[in-house]
Length: 83
Ligand SMILES: [Zn+2]
Image (cartoon, rainbow, N blue to C red; front, side):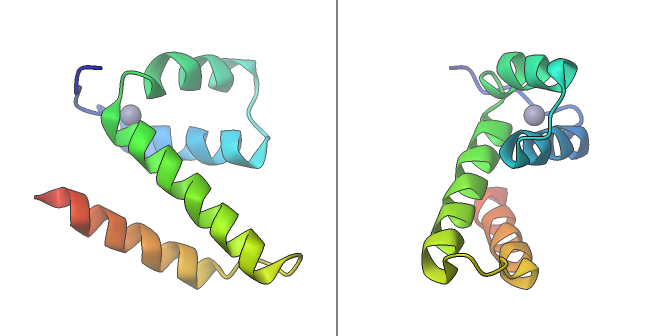
C-alpha cells in the first residue's frame, strides 16, 4: 500500500463515521471501499476509531459512550501522527 495524501479528510471522516455507525448509503460504501484502502491516513483513523468504540463498549457495556473521551482520544491520535 502506497501512502497517498488525503485530499479531503473531513469528508473521509464523515463517511467513516457513517460506515462505523452502519448508516452509510451505497455511494458512501463505494467511496469507503475504494478510498480507505489506498489512504493510509483514513485506514488508520478507521482502525483507531473502531478500537476506541470497541474498548468503550466493552468497558461500559450498554451505557452510552462518553463523547468527551472519544474526542480526547482522537486529538491524541492526531498529535501522535503529526510528526
Ligand atoms: Zn482519506
